[in-house]
Image (cartoon, rainbow, N blue to C red; front, side, top):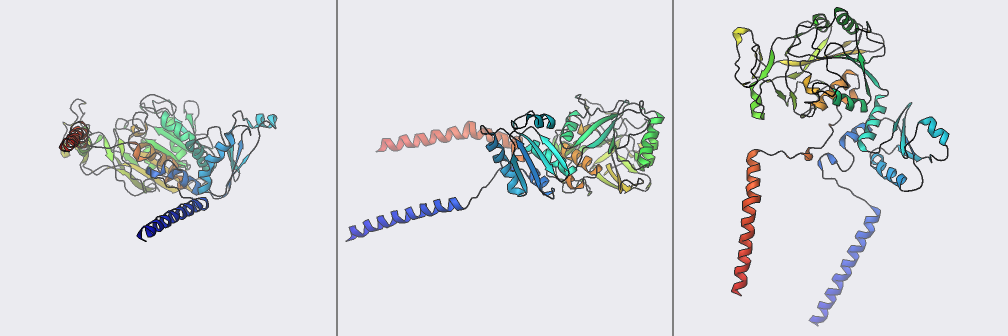
Length: 451
């Protein structure tokens, strides 16, 4: 009898197991669940892409000019499913480019699988199928139209298209993908800022500007134009005082130094590292560390009708150093109050806003930063430098809904570990783990010999 009950228990267990497997199989056809455990959900749609989609208030129509032969259409549809899961009113339709070659030439489509995105009265064309390129195109749709950013040239400024260490070519290439177009502005050729310029950038000139150029910049600001002024410690005698007066901002003498950077491995006190920022729209929710190689402190000297808010501020151990710093012994400096040096915290980034004098727009904005190196080709990749620069440009251009987009990239791409941790890890793999294997092997041999 016991044997019979055991057999029945076995059959019952097998039956229940089959029922459970069948139930799981049936449920898997009715319901789906996906989980992405990578940082920021990197293998699914990124946080930045989701944030851009959230700013698109209305349907987006995507037309793919893909050949029906092959797997290209399936690839495009599968790729866009991630976007459609977040934004259900993002539609996709296919057009066979072989049916109307003349229309394809008119549209300038030469790549099989090219996409044209339609949103309200705007459209963007895309020849590359990747999340970065598609999200950039969607961001340009949010922006509405390309923003014209004029860079003052002719006086030793950082070049917007330059590849030298001090230039801004890498940064501007990334901004152009997001809907900004850099153009040169040389006051030796024109006597005023051209119309339809959305932003003028004066980026660390090394030569004195001609009085006519300074007057053109002052007139541009007085007429309601948006301005980004990147200055440097050595740029205090370039004839720009009228521009500083128009903004109500004064560049303090000396170079800003901070001895607390040694805790972060910075041996040059002129390197200012920030991880905390005064509250302002540009820095709201911004927690990335930024690095400023050489900065000038700034002071607000007059209201001039502006609402001035600092958004970059050095630490309590900082000061304005007047003496030349020996590059071989940069730490051999001391604060000297008798020489007129100022003790920190000190501001070196101001965001200015006021009612626009021009009837064409409601608000005028300007930003003055005491350092331009942080956006240069050399230092752009440090921490959150690029992300902060993008926020500055978005705020100046009035694209407030794009200012707080999540920064690109995922933190799990880099392994941050101290030297002590690295030493322990090395000893574990090189010494402890082999000894453990030898111990286990010896124990197994000893037990076998006892049998």
